[in-house]
Amino acid sequence: MTKDFPLYRLHPGQNGIVTRLSAEGLTRRRLLDLGLVVGTVVESIRKSPLGDPIAYGIRGAVIALRKEESSQVFVRAKNS
Image (cartoon, rainbow, N blue to C red; front, side, top):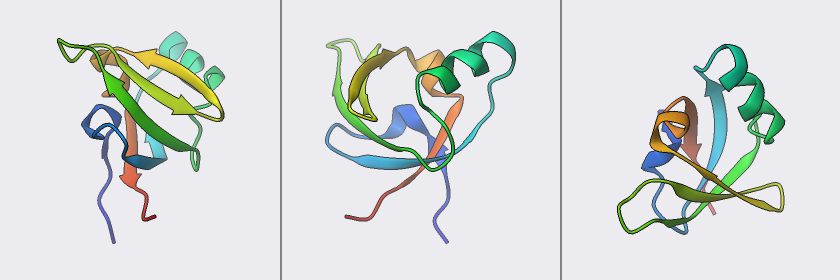
């Protein structure tokens, strides 16, 4: 069984499947509204030059999340 890890640890070009959110309150609501629900496939697209924020592909849209937010989304690596 593969262990889950924070979303920000995905490398550009790598895909992951959302397993859980540790965020609460308004942050949790925002992440859910962006489509980060359990079972969603997320692709890390690119990191900014300083590493924060990171662009992700989620359900056909590209969003940018700061490390603080993406550390509250847990994923497991998706096998091709």
